[in-house]
Image (tube, rainbow, N blue to C red):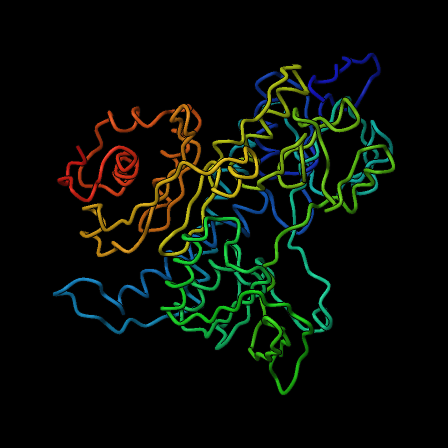
Length: 487
């Protein structure tokens, strides 16, 4: 669909003008927008995750806290700098988890429960909702009618159909964030962002970690040079990684979880105290009764919308992880995109704005140490979309002065351009502080900046952000012959 379908103002009397099913990032962004328009709104928050959704409670925020603590603990034992002796810090894992919980509780209270106090036209109701018909839902046995709806129920861990997996006490991200005791060993199914971040958290705390990745590479969405670099760094820290691993069965034997997997035709059996399933997510639509009212559901269980986030029913929109695909775009399922989608969906639904989201500049990150980040097109995507060879440069961080200051000069950055216009269409990096730089790269992609826009800009020295200018200059010059000012 290229045009947003018109939404009738309606003449019937409804309990609410706008009902938001889901209280996460997308739902809150929509609620804030609705409140600014003085729309009588009901937000329903339910499911396994508290108000605020996955990211703040059991996702990116608590996991990044544990990553930060693990990094501090690791660095105290493995100093990179001459003159700084390694120490023998003591880890109190239980206190680490308690501190994380206290921080998340504080942030959740301020960012979500606190925000509700300022929303005059928004009412919160706790409970699980399901549609009775296209204008009514049921919550805790109560029928509630609405003129317009937003579905923003998020996603949950996808559990693959592996023989015996259901018979063991497996972990998802929720349980892995709140263990009472540090396990001596752990198997992680999945070598994407979630699996890799947890692998480093637990490995640095002292757990023997084995990662089983079904694809040929870890982080297989990313540029091969970057994912291979990250694998090398993680293996250097003692993490065992198997790729092209097809897990056949899981069982419990002699007090351990035993995994039978096939790695390129060779059968391997691995034992560990715990197993973490990090094989992706699935949209939370199962209990909503959507198909019975005519809302389309995709093959992966998520809501299908057009590019305006509108479902098959003109008065029902969807936003956040619950959406699998809008138009031809695949949902990146990120906290920031969920918030943006919630705002856009509410604007389109309540004001007929007809806004589309530009996903070209949506960045993504794996928050390991070093981090791996990406925005825009990869080599493979450029070839697939245009059939042309990528106009690309890859640059070692050896050339970036700040990388040497940090004793972290072994990363790399890659830039892709449109060979005809020199517009920058992709920036990818693995290295120190890459996660803090990617937003600048996103700005470059968003504003369709060209090589000279970057080259002619003055960067602060010395910073890791200069790596973007260095790689841009590499299209023009042999940067190995430049002084440290990159001119």
